[in-house]
Image (cartoon, rainbow, N blue to C red; front, side, top):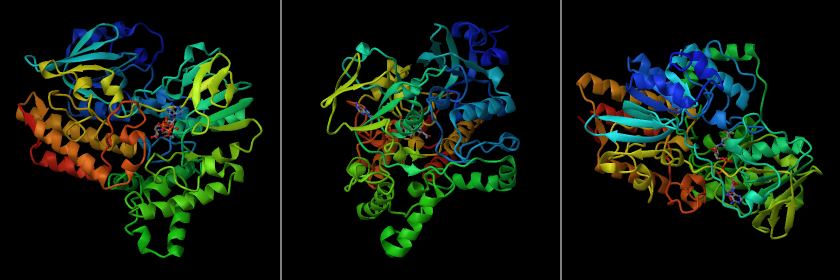
Length: 557
Ligand code: N01
């Protein structure tokens, strides 16, 4: 009985048998309506919505606990950069009795929240954790997917719904000699679940994206020595963390429904849109007043609630960059100005994801912290004692790879997904991702993925998009059931048009000017393209119009 879907204890226990055993009950009841892969926001919300609509929906995840990205990313300092209450689901039964301790919650609290979601929505009986999907093959005659797991068992499902997040595949650069290193090394997204102490260790961190900044702040406090290896300076914004009381949040809850409605109406899925005015249309006093207001508010506001042309006009962007640069320079020694906040922008502000920082710019004044500019001293190889750069060996006891992800496509392509006519998704996307509405791919019937390539995922607040997409997919399946359909497939022309739309939308922005994961540049050999649609509200209105038009662009049968 331990390995039944219905056993909540099984789903929550860490070591209660192999994943094959856990999945055994599915095999006995193979014809589920929908199989969701992934227990993050998208997967859990969709599971709830589909079950509520009467579908026999199930969920699997290779992680042992729900939380998606917050299961894997549990490195020291990992915390979300959307503030309370933006980073939670809008269902009243979920927020009514839930309170957070901080404005930007950390990974532990986020994991507790995911337990709260599964408890409150009674999702556990339909989830099999610790179960990794390795292969999914479309069966045209049966109009179903055969899904194989790492335990070698097969589940059949009418609909395959991967909800893998945009960062399911960590990127580890190929650096010669990694196996020679005498100490431990870890990617931030594959951090040991039991943790690893940085205390009294000499820690080297490669990468200064959002993950690198967060782990560096902790390492500077804990480690005997920290060396941060930077290739491109991060243009980080002040987080302005706050502790939150229950009374404060209870008082705010009256406004939550408005906040949740508002976040569906903005391009980033946050609680504010960019201003209407162009930067260049206001005088300097007004411009600086606006910048200062967003800066003091903290979080990502300086990015998403700035002037309308921040991400479209080079001159406007440069003014914002200069403001950012001068703010940061006031916090660091002049010797570091050109390395951390250069006179000329390394890329237009905001075209690589800004991260939030708390003490990042102060750590470089500490005696135990060194910054290495990899543009000046590139990494040559890893040796037993540490990292050899062009300027010598950086001795260390622990190497942290904060080197990011094969964003968007990576998680989907590492599952062997075989569509109609033996077509493999990984081959189909070899020269670039293409998909209709960022949901479905021609040749892969009855598969809809959420929070993936060519949707707004990388640009959007996670829970906002999880709800918009979850509702949309639920509505699609309800409409199909009502009409007696058992098969949908994106049309090739519709897919081509949407893929071109995303590129065209990107071409109207400054995003293509940066070498970023948004453009696929961070992975050697990955085709260059904007991997996400740059507006949550725009995406929602287009996909709603498609639904209202009888799911135009899909062949239903
Ligand atoms: O990854 P990244 P991340 N040698 O790709 C460097 C979300 N997130 O994990 O910029 C040396 O941004 C690379 O250098 P460069 C968020 O959306 C959110 O930090 O390419 N360096 C860069 O500095 C974020 O944007 C949260 O020159 C190498 C870094 O590694 C996304 O996830 C927290 C290298 C990678 O930065 C990804 O963030 C964490 C090499 N060979 C993440 N290869 C929150 O919610 C790469 N780099 C707070």
